[in-house]
Image (tube, rainbow, N blue to C red):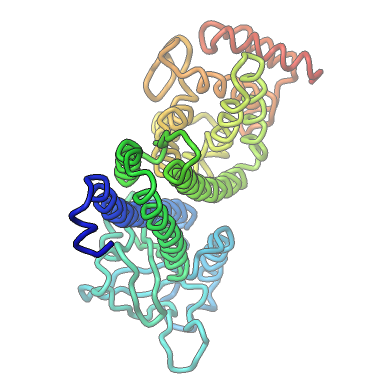
Length: 469
């Protein structure tokens, strides 16, 4: 059959040709959209996570010690203040293997020029002589990096890979505030370009694979089953557009054993891979935040292990109340981070044995909201964030920060409240000694119906009695 004869043939032949071309175009366009969306989405998530890491790292730096570092080049490296801050920065780098450089910088009298204060690795990566240095007081042209200067106002991250004397990096910056709340310096964290290129390379590989499979199956299906293609193709088109629009949970439903159905299965597997990749990134960042909880507990010697105990108590209570294992495990993970907002509080305030002033108590009461803000980029699920925000609400509405009461408070947050209070009562604190188990149980019963949900107290008593604690 000649070329002209083919195109002047039956309607089915025309439909087959049109279908093959359409499927090819759909596969190419949707594959491009998915690749672009996936890359943009993961890059933006990468930036948000880097911003949170940088913002959290800024809370670890003591501004008073930092500002005492003498800005005298290599001589400044020998100062005790420099060594203290450098050790903190190296600890931050050790927590996250992706961090290439971490450093602190301050303003100078010249617009667009900053100066290094502490960089634990003040020479170039290959240590070559004559290369750029970052000793205390060394100047740096920040006019090339607009996001760096913005960090003196609020946390910021480069919008793309940037190149300077130290190489190609993606950098996050956050302000370091003094005791009066004013910005005294900034902290910078550089992620190596290879980590960003790695995301791009993997997504390209998947895109090429999916495109190749799509083209092959488009030709076969167009030639063999043109009558049956229209419906499934419309489903695939809708699915790819929804996935490209951000609906990663959408799945295409095409029954059968032919090539189109297998293409649908490949599409679903690709969507599952994207979700798994996203979950892996969340899990990775969760471990980073979890390490900062350990830093927080190290600041308060009286609460070491507190978060782990509260998390396990919460899980046991949830299971006792008939909550699913999946939801109970989720509760445990969130409960481990319930006090992350205390990272912003001064160590002396956390360990104060005297009565707190009104202002100090106000600062303490802000930590659930601060915790919610810190975890927002990690836990996009509003319920997970509400557990952190509401774990100090009371059943009678006299808690904080929102004075919710009864069923207005998420049941999982109420569970954490009971577990948190019990562990606090049975452990030593700076301002008092511990209660024994009997005394703590009496307090739970006494406050059942006022501070605590009676059903949760009842379930917790069963857990403790069963385990013989």
